[in-house]
Length: 282
Length: 282
Image 1 (cartoon, rainbow over the protein chains, first blue to last red):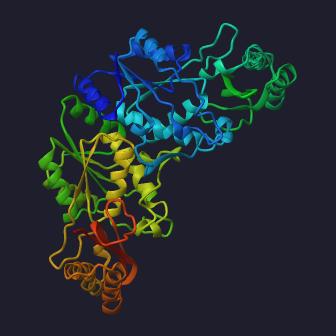
Image 2: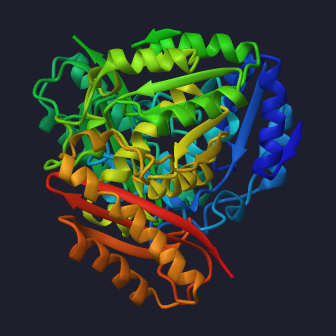
Image 3: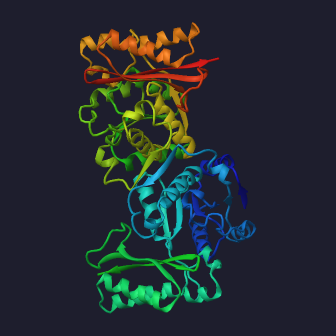
């Protein structure tokens, strides 16, 4: 595995691979890899000649009050894990390398951002779409892998690829969970032992909603109330949002039918967790 | 020469060429080709294996009161001219093909747009940068050719390529002029015979400013006044702007030195013309 820190070096390697018509699987991450990321890498390894992993904590997608400086980082551990997953190139640029001066252009995401995390994180998805545009142009991947845990991110990237005509196939990959059901996340390490135990309520409440739907419930307000109550009355978690929307368009629902997402964000002390479930309802 | 109207067909052809490691020269235009465009095509022909010309009057870059619907169009004439210039692929998509639904993303140009044409055309360069991003992703050019007549556009595209890391070389090409000095433009056909005669004042005033600088003038206000007076008192032209800025950063000048641009926009009856001169001052 080759660790590459400059855009120029990365482009030289990509050119070499492209000139040999190699397919390139790309997994963009902010590092502190967990099993969710490793599943993406594993999938990319199976489906491509070359696998590129990027590790970059992108300041552009953090708000001024968010956890950019405290976001967990452990490059040596990540490097070892990437090696195990047979990554070919680990692209690890500095902030100065990615943003040598204030950018004259950015991607503005006009749709799919006024709900879920986008509502409470203004500019977040502009930052995501801007850095992903840069990565796409540097790495020229055949396929790009994103986890469905951030289902809104997947929806935004789907729009980015389609509407900007990137010649890239988006591969959304299922959520990977701990044994007790908590969705894997780099932020889980910051949960206190007590909060860690209680955090399983995110998944549990989603399953409860799924069961209620299977039992015939079709009223969104009732479902949202069911979930909110499980969290609010059973744990220390503070609900940021619980929403039920169409997927991937992320529009409000008239009737509970078609492809829908139930998504939530809950804060435990200082740690904000997200989870979701996507369902086909007939 | 092959005329292609769908993105998918264009991508198939580009893939074929890329797999043979052919270099691709790209000339994006809004059609109604004049000698300026032909110079771009000629240059692209000399420097690349494959030449792609796009003709697309991009609604996104016209304001609500601008001349989108009346912008001159003559596809059969353009096709014949492109054939003469040995273009390989003429990409001619419809508006529906380029924008099948409202785009979920757009490029927002944050810098170099609060001066010159950008000042009076809010959103214009966002529209330009957005459509060019789409074209770049569809055509994957090695080199992209733009005329220096729209010097601000060249500056914006330079920022777009650099800051989004497009693996594309920007080739700015010198302004082509009529024998009497008027810069070639698709809009020139809409000038009345009298306005057409008077329109040479754009180039003449720029040359007068250049001469004044050669004679030692270093005061921007004096130079702008010299140009404005030549236009206002000598013709029916109404000055939209006359500005002197650094190039390509397009920042106001403290002292007249380094690489500078003198740029102007003048309206004759209903036709708005632009012209500029870029100078090295020591």
